Length: 358
Image 1: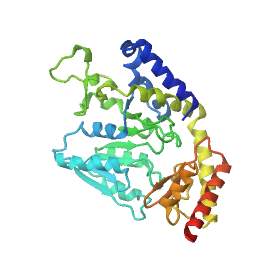
Image 2: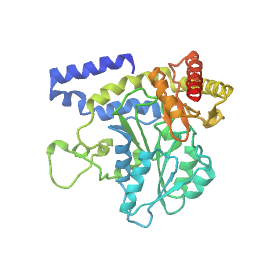
Image 3: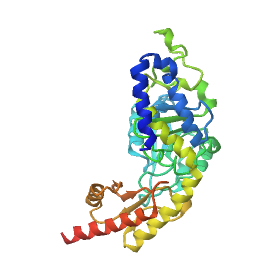
Image 4: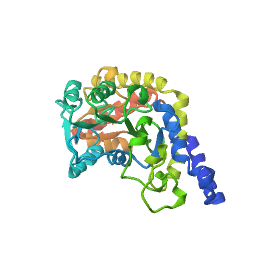
Protein backbone atom coordinates (compact mmCIF):
# COMPACT_ATOMS: atom_id res chain seq x y z
CA UNK A 1 0.00 0.00 0.00
CA UNK A 2 1.41 3.41 -0.94
CA UNK A 3 1.95 5.62 2.11
CA UNK A 4 -0.17 8.39 0.61
CA UNK A 5 -3.17 6.02 0.32
CA UNK A 6 -3.94 6.45 4.02
CA UNK A 7 -4.24 10.20 3.41
CA UNK A 8 -6.59 9.55 0.47
CA UNK A 9 -8.85 7.37 2.61
CA UNK A 10 -8.85 9.98 5.36
CA UNK A 11 -9.80 12.51 2.69
CA UNK A 12 -12.75 10.30 1.71
CA UNK A 13 -13.90 10.11 5.33
CA UNK A 14 -13.52 13.88 5.74
CA UNK A 15 -15.49 14.63 2.57
CA UNK A 16 -18.24 12.19 3.53
CA UNK A 17 -18.53 13.57 7.05
CA UNK A 18 -18.46 17.25 6.08
CA UNK A 19 -20.12 17.38 2.66
CA UNK A 20 -22.54 14.44 2.80
CA UNK A 21 -24.71 14.11 -0.30
CA UNK A 22 -23.22 17.34 -1.69
CA UNK A 23 -20.06 15.34 -2.43
CA UNK A 24 -21.80 13.73 -5.42
CA UNK A 25 -22.06 17.01 -7.31
CA UNK A 26 -18.65 18.12 -6.02
CA UNK A 27 -16.71 15.29 -7.66
CA UNK A 28 -17.97 11.87 -6.65
CA UNK A 29 -20.32 11.48 -9.62
CA UNK A 30 -17.46 12.03 -12.07
CA UNK A 31 -14.96 9.80 -10.26
CA UNK A 32 -15.50 6.63 -12.36
CA UNK A 33 -14.18 8.53 -15.38
CA UNK A 34 -11.82 10.96 -13.57
CA UNK A 35 -9.98 8.08 -11.87
CA UNK A 36 -10.29 6.07 -15.07
CA UNK A 37 -8.27 8.77 -16.80
CA UNK A 38 -5.35 8.00 -14.46
CA UNK A 39 -5.49 4.37 -15.57
CA UNK A 40 -5.86 5.56 -19.15
CA UNK A 41 -2.51 7.34 -18.90
CA UNK A 42 -0.86 4.03 -18.00
CA UNK A 43 -2.54 1.93 -20.73
CA UNK A 44 -2.44 4.42 -23.60
CA UNK A 45 -6.16 5.19 -23.67
CA UNK A 46 -7.59 8.58 -24.52
CA UNK A 47 -9.30 10.92 -22.02
CA UNK A 48 -12.72 9.64 -21.01
CA UNK A 49 -12.18 6.16 -22.50
CA UNK A 50 -11.72 4.22 -19.23
CA UNK A 51 -14.39 3.70 -16.58
CA UNK A 52 -13.97 2.29 -13.09
CA UNK A 53 -15.92 -0.73 -11.80
CA UNK A 54 -15.75 -2.89 -8.66
CA UNK A 55 -13.92 -5.78 -10.38
CA UNK A 56 -12.98 -7.43 -13.66
CA UNK A 57 -15.82 -9.95 -13.51
CA UNK A 58 -18.32 -7.08 -13.74
CA UNK A 59 -16.35 -5.52 -16.60
CA UNK A 60 -16.26 -8.79 -18.53
CA UNK A 61 -19.96 -9.48 -17.91
CA UNK A 62 -20.84 -5.97 -19.06
CA UNK A 63 -18.95 -6.47 -22.33
CA UNK A 64 -20.60 -9.80 -23.09
CA UNK A 65 -24.01 -8.34 -22.33
CA UNK A 66 -23.65 -6.05 -25.36
CA UNK A 67 -24.04 -8.95 -27.81
CA UNK A 68 -26.80 -11.26 -29.01
CA UNK A 69 -25.51 -14.81 -28.61
CA UNK A 70 -28.51 -16.46 -30.31
CA UNK A 71 -27.38 -15.43 -33.79
CA UNK A 72 -25.42 -17.70 -36.18
CA UNK A 73 -22.19 -15.79 -35.53
CA UNK A 74 -21.86 -16.81 -31.88
CA UNK A 75 -18.37 -18.21 -31.40
CA UNK A 76 -16.09 -17.05 -28.59
CA UNK A 77 -12.41 -17.96 -28.75
CA UNK A 78 -10.38 -18.02 -25.55
CA UNK A 79 -7.45 -19.98 -24.13
CA UNK A 80 -7.64 -22.85 -21.67
CA UNK A 81 -5.17 -20.94 -19.48
CA UNK A 82 -7.33 -17.82 -19.24
CA UNK A 83 -8.08 -16.71 -15.68
CA UNK A 84 -10.82 -19.02 -14.33
CA UNK A 85 -13.20 -16.15 -13.48
CA UNK A 86 -13.21 -15.12 -17.15
CA UNK A 87 -13.88 -18.69 -18.27
CA UNK A 88 -16.73 -19.10 -15.77
CA UNK A 89 -18.43 -16.06 -17.30
CA UNK A 90 -17.87 -17.28 -20.86
CA UNK A 91 -19.33 -20.71 -20.14
CA UNK A 92 -22.43 -19.15 -18.62
CA UNK A 93 -22.99 -17.51 -22.01
CA UNK A 94 -23.50 -20.96 -23.52
CA UNK A 95 -26.97 -20.87 -21.92
CA UNK A 96 -27.70 -17.87 -24.19
CA UNK A 97 -26.46 -19.64 -27.32
CA UNK A 98 -22.75 -18.79 -27.33
CA UNK A 99 -20.29 -21.40 -28.58
CA UNK A 100 -17.12 -21.24 -26.49
CA UNK A 101 -13.87 -22.65 -27.89
CA UNK A 102 -10.79 -22.74 -25.65
CA UNK A 103 -7.38 -23.18 -27.26
CA UNK A 104 -5.43 -25.88 -25.38
CA UNK A 105 -1.89 -25.65 -24.06
CA UNK A 106 0.58 -28.50 -24.54
CA UNK A 107 2.72 -27.65 -21.52
CA UNK A 108 0.22 -25.99 -19.19
CA UNK A 109 2.27 -22.79 -19.32
CA UNK A 110 2.14 -21.36 -22.86
CA UNK A 111 -0.43 -20.98 -25.65
CA UNK A 112 0.77 -21.64 -29.23
CA UNK A 113 0.12 -18.50 -31.26
CA UNK A 114 -0.55 -20.40 -34.49
CA UNK A 115 -3.19 -22.50 -32.73
CA UNK A 116 -4.84 -19.38 -31.31
CA UNK A 117 -4.91 -17.65 -34.69
CA UNK A 118 -6.28 -20.75 -36.43
CA UNK A 119 -9.19 -20.92 -33.98
CA UNK A 120 -10.38 -17.44 -35.00
CA UNK A 121 -12.62 -17.76 -38.07
CA UNK A 122 -15.66 -16.23 -39.79
CA UNK A 123 -17.97 -17.61 -37.11
CA UNK A 124 -16.07 -15.84 -34.33
CA UNK A 125 -17.82 -12.89 -32.74
CA UNK A 126 -15.48 -12.31 -29.82
CA UNK A 127 -11.93 -13.26 -28.85
CA UNK A 128 -11.38 -13.13 -25.08
CA UNK A 129 -7.76 -13.58 -23.99
CA UNK A 130 -5.35 -12.72 -21.21
CA UNK A 131 -2.38 -10.58 -22.20
CA UNK A 132 -0.23 -12.47 -19.69
CA UNK A 133 -1.10 -15.96 -18.48
CA UNK A 134 -1.67 -15.61 -14.74
CA UNK A 135 -0.08 -18.93 -13.84
CA UNK A 136 3.14 -18.88 -15.87
CA UNK A 137 3.75 -15.21 -16.78
CA UNK A 138 3.72 -16.09 -20.50
CA UNK A 139 3.09 -13.02 -22.68
CA UNK A 140 0.67 -13.53 -25.55
CA UNK A 141 1.04 -11.64 -28.82
CA UNK A 142 -2.01 -9.39 -28.44
CA UNK A 143 -1.24 -7.46 -31.60
CA UNK A 144 -1.19 -10.57 -33.78
CA UNK A 145 -4.35 -11.93 -32.13
CA UNK A 146 -6.14 -8.61 -32.62
CA UNK A 147 -5.05 -8.33 -36.24
CA UNK A 148 -6.36 -11.83 -37.01
CA UNK A 149 -9.64 -11.18 -35.18
CA UNK A 150 -10.29 -7.98 -37.08
CA UNK A 151 -9.50 -9.69 -40.39
CA UNK A 152 -12.23 -12.20 -39.53
CA UNK A 153 -14.66 -9.48 -38.43
CA UNK A 154 -14.41 -10.36 -34.73
CA UNK A 155 -13.76 -8.15 -31.70
CA UNK A 156 -11.15 -8.62 -28.96
CA UNK A 157 -11.48 -8.46 -25.18
CA UNK A 158 -8.04 -8.35 -23.53
CA UNK A 159 -7.60 -9.04 -19.83
CA UNK A 160 -4.54 -6.89 -19.04
CA UNK A 161 -4.66 -7.38 -15.26
CA UNK A 162 -1.37 -9.29 -15.15
CA UNK A 163 0.55 -6.87 -17.38
CA UNK A 164 -0.44 -3.26 -16.68
CA UNK A 165 2.00 -1.59 -14.33
CA UNK A 166 4.88 -3.96 -15.05
CA UNK A 167 4.81 -4.14 -18.84
CA UNK A 168 4.25 -1.27 -21.31
CA UNK A 169 0.72 -1.54 -22.72
CA UNK A 170 -0.91 0.76 -25.27
CA UNK A 171 -4.46 -0.34 -26.02
CA UNK A 172 -4.90 2.05 -28.94
CA UNK A 173 -1.67 0.96 -30.64
CA UNK A 174 -2.55 -2.70 -30.18
CA UNK A 175 -6.07 -2.00 -31.43
CA UNK A 176 -8.05 -4.10 -28.95
CA UNK A 177 -11.75 -3.37 -28.79
CA UNK A 178 -12.06 -3.86 -25.03
CA UNK A 179 -9.59 -4.16 -22.16
CA UNK A 180 -10.21 -5.01 -18.54
CA UNK A 181 -8.02 -5.09 -15.46
CA UNK A 182 -7.80 -4.42 -11.76
CA UNK A 183 -5.64 -2.70 -9.21
CA UNK A 184 -4.69 -5.38 -6.69
CA UNK A 185 -1.50 -6.37 -8.50
CA UNK A 186 1.06 -4.16 -10.27
CA UNK A 187 -0.94 -0.92 -9.99
CA UNK A 188 -0.73 -0.97 -6.16
CA UNK A 189 -4.32 0.26 -5.96
CA UNK A 190 -5.94 -2.33 -3.74
CA UNK A 191 -9.26 -4.16 -4.12
CA UNK A 192 -12.56 -2.86 -5.45
CA UNK A 193 -11.08 -0.89 -8.36
CA UNK A 194 -11.46 -2.65 -11.68
CA UNK A 195 -11.28 -0.74 -14.95
CA UNK A 196 -12.79 -1.05 -18.41
CA UNK A 197 -11.53 0.37 -21.71
CA UNK A 198 -13.91 0.43 -24.69
CA UNK A 199 -12.72 1.67 -28.06
CA UNK A 200 -14.42 4.99 -28.66
CA UNK A 201 -15.76 4.23 -32.13
CA UNK A 202 -17.77 1.31 -30.72
CA UNK A 203 -19.69 3.38 -28.16
CA UNK A 204 -22.75 4.29 -30.29
CA UNK A 205 -23.41 0.63 -31.21
CA UNK A 206 -23.10 -0.93 -27.76
CA UNK A 207 -26.02 -1.16 -25.33
CA UNK A 208 -25.09 -3.32 -22.32
CA UNK A 209 -27.79 -5.38 -20.63
CA UNK A 210 -25.66 -5.18 -17.48
CA UNK A 211 -26.51 -1.56 -16.75
CA UNK A 212 -27.95 0.91 -14.26
CA UNK A 213 -29.08 4.48 -13.77
CA UNK A 214 -25.61 6.03 -14.09
CA UNK A 215 -25.55 4.82 -17.71
CA UNK A 216 -28.67 6.80 -18.58
CA UNK A 217 -28.38 9.92 -20.71
CA UNK A 218 -30.46 11.87 -18.17
CA UNK A 219 -30.14 9.92 -14.92
CA UNK A 220 -31.68 12.62 -12.74
CA UNK A 221 -34.82 12.75 -14.85
CA UNK A 222 -35.69 9.44 -13.15
CA UNK A 223 -37.53 8.35 -16.28
CA UNK A 224 -38.77 4.79 -15.74
CA UNK A 225 -39.35 4.24 -19.46
CA UNK A 226 -37.04 2.89 -22.15
CA UNK A 227 -33.32 3.04 -21.40
CA UNK A 228 -31.59 5.90 -23.24
CA UNK A 229 -27.84 5.39 -22.97
CA UNK A 230 -25.39 8.22 -22.38
CA UNK A 231 -23.36 9.26 -25.40
CA UNK A 232 -20.03 8.98 -23.59
CA UNK A 233 -18.32 6.23 -21.56
CA UNK A 234 -20.89 6.68 -18.79
CA UNK A 235 -23.04 4.32 -20.89
CA UNK A 236 -20.88 1.49 -19.51
CA UNK A 237 -21.55 2.28 -15.83
CA UNK A 238 -24.25 0.70 -13.66
CA UNK A 239 -25.42 1.79 -10.20
CA UNK A 240 -23.69 3.62 -7.35
CA UNK A 241 -19.91 3.32 -7.82
CA UNK A 242 -17.35 2.20 -5.25
CA UNK A 243 -16.19 5.66 -4.13
CA UNK A 244 -13.86 4.55 -1.27
CA UNK A 245 -12.24 1.99 -3.59
CA UNK A 246 -11.38 4.73 -6.07
CA UNK A 247 -9.96 6.96 -3.34
CA UNK A 248 -7.77 4.04 -2.26
CA UNK A 249 -6.63 3.20 -5.80
CA UNK A 250 -5.65 6.69 -6.96
CA UNK A 251 -2.23 6.87 -5.32
CA UNK A 252 -1.05 3.63 -6.90
CA UNK A 253 -1.90 4.87 -10.39
CA UNK A 254 -0.10 8.14 -9.77
CA UNK A 255 3.03 6.42 -8.44
CA UNK A 256 3.23 3.96 -11.36
CA UNK A 257 3.06 6.92 -13.77
CA UNK A 258 5.71 8.79 -11.77
CA UNK A 259 8.11 5.84 -11.73
CA UNK A 260 7.43 5.03 -15.38
CA UNK A 261 6.40 1.62 -16.72
CA UNK A 262 9.42 1.47 -19.04
CA UNK A 263 11.69 1.81 -16.00
CA UNK A 264 9.65 -0.78 -14.09
CA UNK A 265 9.89 -3.21 -17.01
CA UNK A 266 13.68 -2.88 -17.30
CA UNK A 267 14.11 -3.61 -13.59
CA UNK A 268 11.58 -6.45 -13.78
CA UNK A 269 13.48 -8.19 -16.57
CA UNK A 270 16.72 -7.95 -14.61
CA UNK A 271 15.19 -9.22 -11.38
CA UNK A 272 13.11 -12.04 -12.87
CA UNK A 273 16.24 -13.20 -14.72
CA UNK A 274 18.10 -13.14 -11.42
CA UNK A 275 15.32 -15.12 -9.72
CA UNK A 276 15.39 -17.80 -12.42
CA UNK A 277 19.16 -18.14 -12.08
CA UNK A 278 19.00 -18.36 -8.28
CA UNK A 279 16.19 -20.92 -8.41
CA UNK A 280 17.96 -23.11 -10.92
CA UNK A 281 21.20 -22.93 -8.95
CA UNK A 282 19.20 -24.20 -5.98
CA UNK A 283 17.93 -27.12 -8.08
CA UNK A 284 14.32 -25.97 -8.36
CA UNK A 285 12.00 -26.28 -11.38
CA UNK A 286 11.08 -22.92 -12.88
CA UNK A 287 7.72 -22.64 -14.62
CA UNK A 288 7.91 -19.48 -16.71
CA UNK A 289 9.44 -18.50 -20.05
CA UNK A 290 13.22 -18.09 -20.09
CA UNK A 291 13.05 -15.48 -22.84
CA UNK A 292 12.52 -12.00 -21.40
CA UNK A 293 10.31 -10.86 -24.29
CA UNK A 294 7.93 -13.76 -23.55
CA UNK A 295 7.97 -13.31 -19.76
CA UNK A 296 5.92 -10.99 -17.58
CA UNK A 297 6.80 -9.90 -14.07
CA UNK A 298 6.37 -13.14 -12.12
CA UNK A 299 8.44 -16.28 -11.67
CA UNK A 300 6.81 -19.55 -10.59
CA UNK A 301 9.08 -21.97 -8.72
CA UNK A 302 7.94 -25.54 -8.25
CA UNK A 303 9.19 -27.45 -5.23
CA UNK A 304 7.84 -30.50 -3.38
CA UNK A 305 4.96 -29.56 -1.07
CA UNK A 306 4.84 -26.11 -2.67
CA UNK A 307 1.53 -25.20 -1.04
CA UNK A 308 2.84 -25.93 2.46
CA UNK A 309 6.10 -24.12 1.67
CA UNK A 310 4.07 -21.10 0.54
CA UNK A 311 2.13 -21.06 3.81
CA UNK A 312 5.36 -21.05 5.80
CA UNK A 313 6.82 -18.29 3.61
CA UNK A 314 3.77 -16.14 4.30
CA UNK A 315 4.10 -16.84 8.01
CA UNK A 316 7.66 -15.49 7.76
CA UNK A 317 6.40 -12.36 5.94
CA UNK A 318 7.55 -13.32 2.46
CA UNK A 319 4.67 -12.07 0.29
CA UNK A 320 4.28 -14.78 -2.34
CA UNK A 321 1.37 -16.90 -3.51
CA UNK A 322 0.72 -20.44 -4.69
CA UNK A 323 -0.67 -21.44 -8.08
CA UNK A 324 -1.68 -25.08 -8.64
CA UNK A 325 0.27 -26.63 -11.50
CA UNK A 326 2.91 -23.90 -11.38
CA UNK A 327 4.22 -23.60 -7.81
CA UNK A 328 5.28 -20.64 -5.70
CA UNK A 329 4.72 -17.40 -7.60
CA UNK A 330 7.18 -14.60 -6.80
CA UNK A 331 6.51 -11.11 -8.12
CA UNK A 332 9.25 -8.51 -7.58
CA UNK A 333 8.09 -4.96 -8.25
CA UNK A 334 9.89 -1.63 -8.57
CA UNK A 335 10.34 -1.37 -4.78
CA UNK A 336 11.92 -4.86 -4.40
CA UNK A 337 15.69 -5.01 -3.85
CA UNK A 338 18.02 -7.75 -5.04
CA UNK A 339 18.80 -8.92 -1.50
CA UNK A 340 15.15 -9.85 -1.03
CA UNK A 341 15.33 -12.19 -4.03
CA UNK A 342 18.25 -14.08 -2.55
CA UNK A 343 16.50 -14.19 0.83
CA UNK A 344 13.33 -15.77 -0.52
CA UNK A 345 15.24 -18.47 -2.44
CA UNK A 346 17.24 -19.33 0.68
CA UNK A 347 14.02 -19.45 2.69
CA UNK A 348 12.45 -21.83 0.17
CA UNK A 349 15.54 -24.03 0.37
CA UNK A 350 15.47 -24.21 4.16
CA UNK A 351 11.72 -24.81 4.39
CA UNK A 352 11.76 -27.47 1.65
CA UNK A 353 14.75 -29.20 3.30
CA UNK A 354 13.02 -29.21 6.71
CA UNK A 355 9.90 -30.69 5.11
CA UNK A 356 11.92 -33.52 3.57
CA UNK A 357 13.53 -34.34 6.91
CA UNK A 358 10.16 -34.27 8.68
